[in-house]
Length: 380
Image (cartoon, rainbow, N blue to C red; front, side):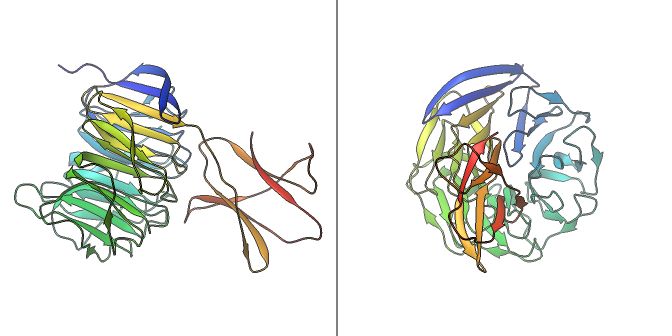
């Protein structure tokens, strides 16, 4: 009999873990997804229910859903629109961060993979046991079968706008493995030239714009693409029993799970290093947009590890049509943009900005003025 799993929260500076908090939850294997800022996390239990956290794993709430073999979850960028799929059943949708759920039109299948656009309207689901891929453009109210082979679909990734999709299939029971990509929301798909028909692709993740992809193979390596899957290259990550992978919005920070360890890369996959070794069978993983919050499932210990890295936000400055464009990835901490005409100063003025869903960045445009102007991101 399995013991109840644990929700674990930790603060990470460099590669050191500290300050863990344990919270009891349901037993069973499960999936995990999170909002862009990493504070809203949702988990699905197999078998069991659905739980969510609004404070990066510090506390958890049980959702009002039937007990089922929940196998996949997906979240919008703000964490308000959620989708969850049942192995051997259909799927459910919530538009209020899990407070209420209702069934949608996804037909029963052995669903295993689920992904969402950042506004929650576009969903994509993949089934294993020689299953299909379905897509929705209305938050799951209706679904369309996609023109791809029935394969053993293990993982699906979506760009922020939901138009660029990537799906990973493993070779099981005689099926062919492969990575397929779509640039039109699933209307058409292309088989990528990477690995072999026997490569067991287990996990795949995408940057917000869909150009950077990362995929992991069970008893294989970690591969990256910088052109939406047209070309792939194997990284220096060791050959391992890789299970899943997650990516920051810009594709610079990656995290991968295996049976024996959790690895991260902070340079777009060029180099990898372990942050956790041993301690069970690491499987599903989700990342905040800035890559500084990771939620990882451990199937052996029935626990969730929420790992927090020290944020190092970067303010980008560019020009467009004669204006100054300021932008930064949705942060895992509360930040405000401020300006001042002089330095040093204690008189900073807050600025207005808006979220751009296509790249999960906050942006604002500033008209050039005579004299100096200084900008900064600061915590609230």
